[in-house]
Length: 126
Image 1 (tube, rainbow, N blue to C red):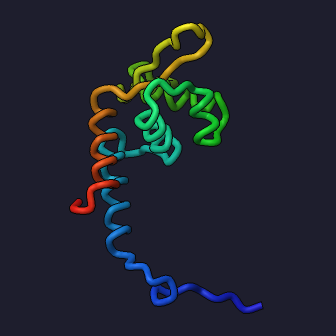
Image 2: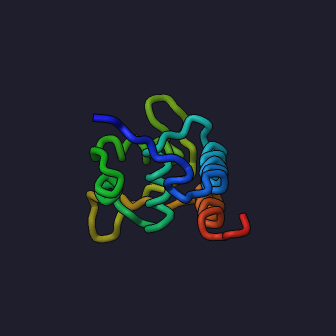
Image 3: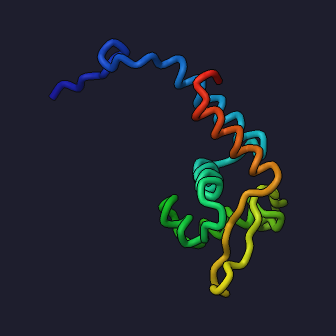
């Protein structure tokens, strides 16, 4: 069976602008950590979209295990993880009425990053 490859003419998509915008988005994320992972990016976006989101909700949204989310959130908080300093872009707080759950919120550079990402995604002039 012969494979066909879609070409630019086939898709009618101008690649340049969206590739440039994606590169800008990744550069924004790298400002807080040059080694940031895709899962960490997703976690930050979900926390920015839904302040107070629990780690269980994050695990479902990002489709990773609870332990992975716990490590990502610890690394992104002031606590850090396994000897690595925290990035201090997320605050982990108890959820009122549920002593077992922790809610995540963006703080400081995390808020600024989310605002910058949001602007890049929604402002056609950027």
